[in-house]
Length: 105
Image 1 (tube, rainbow, N blue to C red):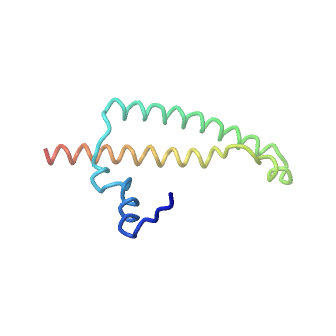
Image 2 (image 1 turned 135 degrees about the vertical axis):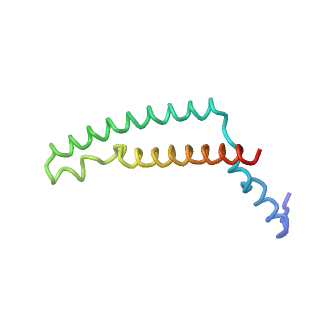
Image 3 (image 1 turned 120 degrees about the horizontal axis):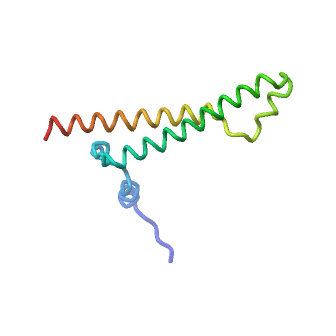
């Protein structure tokens, strides 16, 4: 069966799973938020240990071999930075949402 959608139908389908502005105001439960914080902190601790290990290994390797030594390995610094940004944004959103709920309701 061959079927073509018109422009209005395409716009409707594109807007089907789009986030609304009010989705940012929905808060997670405190238990779920604290569990995700604990998991993220454990992950960050592991990443910090692997980053320290990578720095120590980098100091031991000669300059010529440094470019090839890290190929295929996880960059702990990037993952640590990403995890930190995610943790901070989640906590700020949760805090601001809680304050907004307290004032509004």
